[in-house]
Length: 253
Image 1 (tube, rainbow, N blue to C red):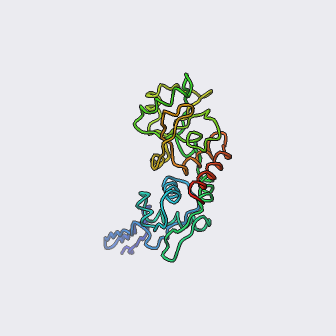
Image 2 (cartoon, rainbow, N blue to C red; image 1 turned 60 degrees about the horizontal axis):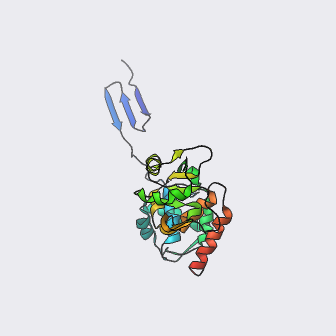
Image 3 (spheres, rainbow, N blue to C red; image 1 turned 60 degrees about the vertical axis):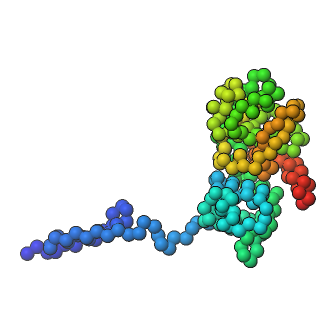
């Protein structure tokens, strides 16, 4: 008489199988797709689109803001926003009340913290071009684009000349063709950026073009301009800090 042999093992998916040779029995069970006791991982940086949206909203929207309001404003999940706010609270750049609403934000500290994890040319898809006839001919042509937002010195405090036009566009090659730009690795005077997130096109401003006050340019918000100046080519940190001072004076802080 053959001895009964039992086999009990888990396959690569975690399913448990039980096989008996005599009598012939085969049983298979499937476990839960997710660990019911899984604890969401704490956030340790401000990398990524969702974190950028939260930072922008905290800098630019009126307070107080609850997590749900913030999530709706950012278009991000409650869990992501909650983890981001908790991380920022641990970094001492914001304050919450007993209802867990954000009631105060240290905007300079928050933006400097974001700049540690963001890079203009690493967080966005950056491509260099040449406007052969000079930047003064570029300004009126920007109106041909369906969507754009200038950043860097064009959106900065106005203390430095613009030698490199940095412009967010949804599609860099298409924009370059519309503007008549030439690809250039050396001697470029235009940097087209496909953004890390469409939030760069939110809460934009209008400013006169350099040397052409009758031409209005669409530029990014102060918060976006700061982080782009702080992390962009040349590391224009002095311009970034001047922008923060200008921003603070404008709102009386």
